[in-house]
Image 1 (cartoon, rainbow, N blue to C red):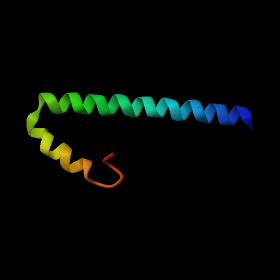
Image 2: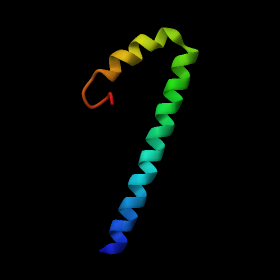
Image 3: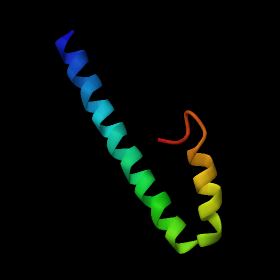
Length: 51
């Protein structure tokens, strides 16, 4: 069971890293496309989508 927990923890850490990379890419894209910033801000207000 300990091996399963270690694998699960490693997977969760990896997923957190992927989410951080996706967030960083979205922010980078928003700075390059100001017309999308309003849509991004609206999306961030949705429960389960935003922070």
